[in-house]
Amino acid sequence: MEGEDGYDIIWKVVLIGDSGVGKSNLLSRYTRNEFRLESKPTIGIEFATRTVELEGKSIKVQIWDTAGQERYRAITSAYYRKAVGALLVYDIAKFSTFENLEKWISEVKTHGESDIVIMLVGNKSDLRHLRTVMFDDAKNFSDQNGFASIETSALEDTNVEQAFKNHLNDIFTVQS
Ligand code: GDP
Ligand code: MG
Image 1 (cartoon, rainbow, N blue to C red):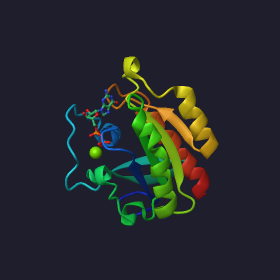
Image 2 (tube, rainbow, N blue to C red):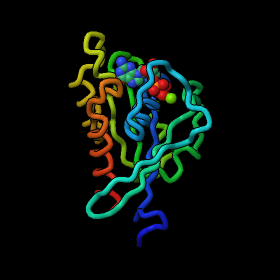
Image 3 (tube, rainbow, N blue to C red):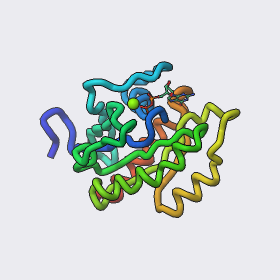
């Protein structure tokens, strides 16, 4: 059944990962094709949406962003509630954001739905000269955990579309 404003399904996807890795910019790039150089915590906005077509179905994707509360690890379970997907973001130029993935994974496992689909996103791939997280190490880590992974640049608009596309396809497989 098609919904009132023309979609068949609604999905919630959450963005998680350390402060400063580029979550808000991945969201603005994907939903509005916008990028901001200055870091500004999202205030008041809980999520942005984009409607995609998948296998003949119109899916309204609600992508939730934190409002900077990840700085204090104060993301509540309400944030994860009913999410079908989680994009776990780290910064390829900041090793600690990769090391902290374990903590984020256990948060998702604690608060998220049991069948939530997780994807690893190594953002800021444009910072090649500052890279501290090797692609192969991230790939091994995601393989071990059974997650898909991709590197993106919200700044250069590299792989952002692809990351969401792959993630939504994986969710589709689990949900149908
Ligand atoms: P958040 O705290 O995870 O939401 O991160 P933000 O989206 O606020 O980004 C933090 C900082 O990193 C800002 O200064 C952004 O301009 C910058 N940033 C975000 N994405 C990229 C990227 O792909 N490449 C580079 N070089 N900087 C980025
Ligand atoms: Mg943010």
